[in-house]
Length: 94
Image (cartoon, rainbow, N blue to C red; front, side, top):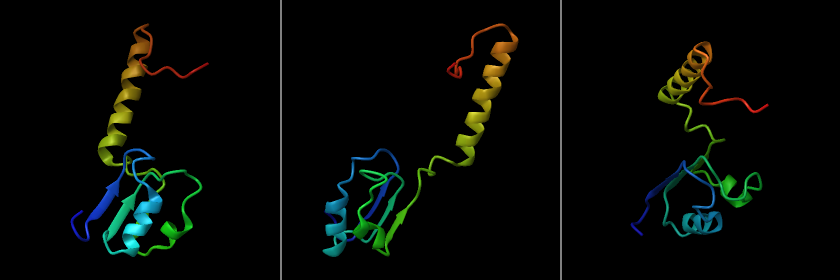
């Protein structure tokens, strides 16, 4: 592993072994980490939480302008489908 890389995980939990990540920080192998998903949430490793160079976010990295626009467009598309008498693509469960 290249010395002092930055780790960013915004995909799924379980991809990053948090114990190994904490150890990598202690050994100086990682310089910074941004984690939007964490293994075994909500039971996050306390040592990881205490590290100064770790940014933990609560599953919000998807929440950018493009994502919000896409959500609005899907809602509008479904409303138009219902108005035309068609079934919605994204129905709410009954």
